[in-house]
Image (cartoon, rainbow, N blue to C red; front, top):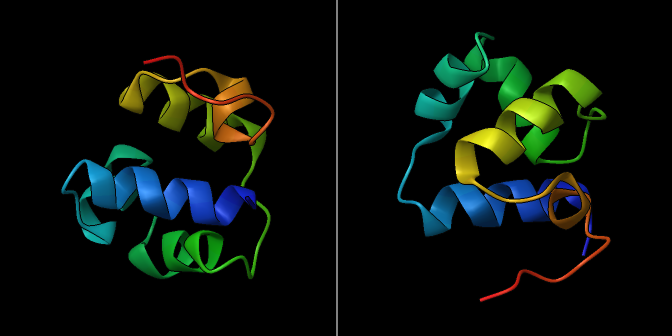
Length: 69
């Protein structure tokens, strides 16, 4: 699974809007949408913030490991 799909799935699984996540990352909604569509590469700092926000490992976020549940 690609990073942008994992980011979208995490957002949807947590019932968040793109606008809410853009605010968490302190960025414009249009920029966040591009990350979620795979049009731009998600920067490392944003990946770290998202992994902390969702309570998942960075490895899981970048699709290197499955979540332990």
